[in-house]
Image (cartoon, rainbow, N blue to C red; front, side):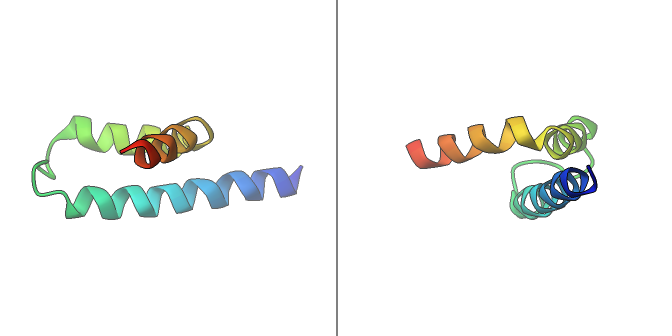
Length: 61
């Protein structure tokens, strides 16, 4: 069970770092917009669902 938790936390941290760097680099979104931070938090928490869709979207574009 500890291994599963470790994998989840590692994936969440990796997703957060990539999402945060993308968010910080995006000049079109204000950094004080609360909804943007909420989406970043949700993407981090639900990374097993969000990450495959994000990769698929990136591959198709």
